[in-house]
Image 1 (tube, rainbow, N blue to C red):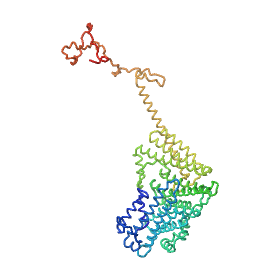
Image 2 (image 1 turned 90 degrees about the vertical axis):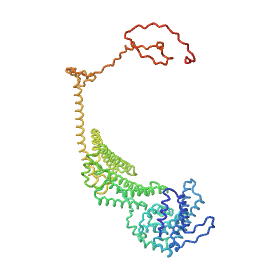
Image 3 (image 1 turned 60 degrees about the horizontal axis):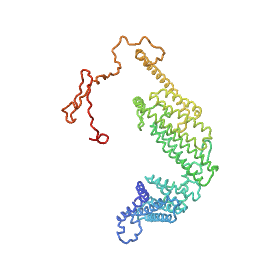
Image 4 (image 1 turned 90 degrees about the horizontal axis):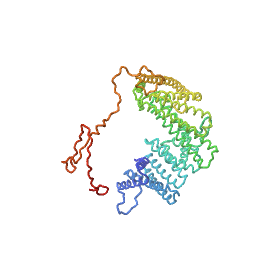
Length: 627
């Protein structure tokens, strides 16, 4: 037997990967036609349409394709309704009543087809078990609830969605693919139940499971209730829900507020469960690589983000109802928002602290960032730190600086939360925490300057980091040491370790600067000695820095054969005695085409003979260019 919900959701998932509801409807029409052809119930081309008989349990038992036929028919009607709703969602004037009635009719048709399928499966001839029948019933309730949601019939809509939620919650414990039901509950069913409950003026203090349980018992038949109890009795048990320990109050900085919204209470309970799970993982896993350890923070970060979103949604709903900021409910929600936001940012900072390495990156470690087992890691790190290229070491320190920047930005975002600026103790602690991580960032940059060969810059940065650490020691000295997961809390042990590390780095940097200055002075003296070794004749363009000139070394004696620059000489006189024979003297030249004779240089200078002037031919053409 095909599982109804999994079959339907797989069709939707494949269609929505590259298309929309219209594409999905087209695909369903093609699949439906092929199914009818295989069942031999398709209307022939140009044939007269005849109404087909209802699908029975016997037909489904003989040919499972009939089950696919009913599901494809219901899904095509649902896709048609969703396509129309999506096409009119951008209309500024809203949806017309005719369009809404058309959408409702398509959804009601889909619900009727699904209900017929439930009746066929309930018969003993179909061979379906209790899980298959409940699965089909939940799918029918889902379509019926969508139709009632569009009709704005809130009470029956809430009842149908509650039936759907309770059945899927029970089937989650029996099915191997419970994640499909969980996604459907969180994305479609729970928001619809919450909105219908809001329209029915049901208090937000009631959680969604309690609302769904009450509506399910009132709307479902005793047979369905018994079937659900047979699968999972805890779904309908109020004591099981109370045993989960959903918190009703929240304490922030010594002030206790009541949690009136059920969604916030559930999210805050999830944060507590994720915190315990993270503590257990880190305690039982032993030594982990920083990346592996940071990956364990994903669950608590997601849970705290859900709590922040639920609080923000509750505040927005109160503002939409016109509740002012001075109202007690709004004040409680603002305190809750600050508390859950502080919790979320605190774990985000803790994740970055884990990534920078041991002792918040104060130790100078250069190792592989890939996820590897810690086999003989101490020896490998020592060898890598010696052989690794300086550019790679600077890149690692740059990554640390980026993580420190993220931590500092998170601390600044905490200062902007409501009520934090008025808390002087918390503000001082945040300022000291900011100074602590700024000192770590300065230490990382100073180490990169040391590797690059700039010890003077490194010394200045380390001195600045030590000053910041000493300023942060007093406010953070009262924070007790904690063995739990890393978060925003900087303990006195962390500050003490950083101060001791910076003190040692400061002495080391001063020694390096002294060595650097000595080497520079020695190099300068060597250059000065090289200059003084030259005679004064070779140093005429250099001003004596000492003010005195060594007159004992004026020239090199005895003189050596050395090259010296000389201006090149051109013997221009020879050009006065170069003559070229005229063309007339070449009697054998043919119409000026013969090449001129080589130049003749006379041995003795003779006065040029006077030649009679020859008559110049008259110019022809424009500007003398013609012939």
